[in-house]
Length: 155
Image 1 (cartoon, rainbow, N blue to C red):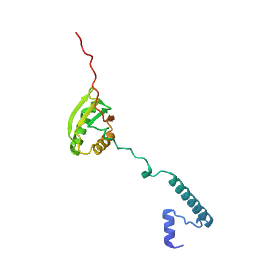
Image 2 (cartoon, one colour; image 1 turned 90 degrees about the vertical axis):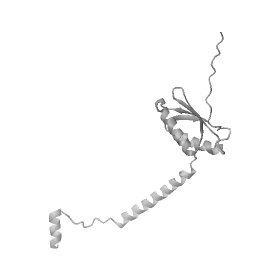
Image 3 (cartoon, rainbow, N blue to C red; image 1 turned 45 degrees about the vertical axis):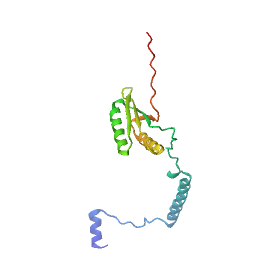
C-alpha cells in the first residue's frame, strides 16, 4: 500500500471495495425487466388519448344565438363593478362597441348589449371565450334580460 493511500484511509476512514461488482446474470435480468417495462408503457401510452385527440369545447354558435345581447351572472355581487369595468376594457381593446350596460338585482346580474359587426359568428366566439374564462362569473347567456310585467293598477 502506498504511503498516500494509507494516509487517506487513516484520515478519511475510507475502505476499498473488493468484489461488490454485480454479476453478469443480475445485469441481464435487470436489463430484461427494463425492456419489458418499456414495452408495457408503450402499450399503455398507445391506448391513452393524447391531447390532440381530446374533444375541445365547441365554440361555434349559430347566427340566431348571438344578437348582441349578453347577460352574465356574478358569483359575488361585491365584485360586480370590477367585473363590469374589466369586461368594458376588454371589449374596447378588441374593438367591440357597447351600446348598453345595465346592472340588475343589486349587481348580481349584468347585461351588455354590443353592436353587431360584419361577422357575428366570430364575435360571439370571442365573447364566449372571454366570458367563459372569467372566474368571477357563474354563467352567461346570449339573451336579453326579461322584463317583468308589473300588474296594472286599476282605480
